[in-house]
Amino acid sequence: MLQTQKRPTTIYMEANPNPNSLKFVVNFMLADEGVSFDYPNQESTENSPLAHELFNFAAVDRVFIASNFVTVTKKEEVEWLELQDIVRNHIKTYLESGKAPVNADFDKDPLFDENDSEVVKKIKGILDEYIRPAVEQDGGAIVFHSFQDGIVKVLLQGSCSGCPSSTVTLKAGIQNLLTRMLPEVKEVQAQGV
Image (cartoon, rainbow, N blue to C red; front, side, top):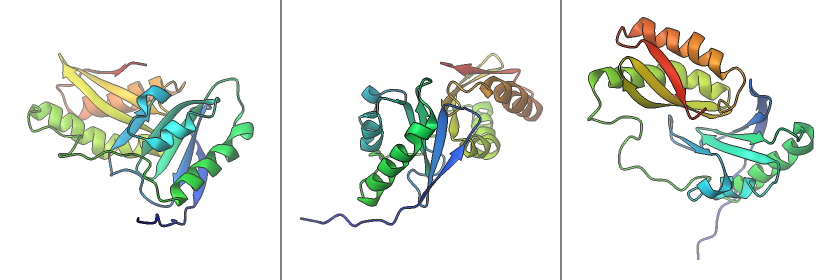
């Protein structure tokens, strides 16, 4: 039987614009670059044992895993001071055991589809190159949903989901950039917010 190797793990916490979310940054990659996993509830965690365990804490409302961080969104009535060290220590212990945070393999790049139109390829490229890094810094993600009749629809995940400033980010930042770079884009809308 193979023994799991203990992995030295360092975690620091970062606040973000969503007061109910906290970003737990790890000293190694948890997911491939540009790939993220959003878990709005425990039922959705079939491919993430870490997210499943975090939902065992009654105060946890949402879990998001990307690149080198886990963003946890707490329930409104709980203060971070009561919860942050418990969550950080649980993530640290879990990762130090050598277990994978997410069990997912991709046969192809999940971000790009060869059947996309040229405009959609350009939209996804702009989202990936200019917007994703900034949104990830705040503990969230933006995922392309669709493009039709000049309207780009995106999904906001992680700390962006339910964030009070996400509408401003969407309209003042993302929409302005996309409409300036691509004349085919007239508006950007968030799905499922």
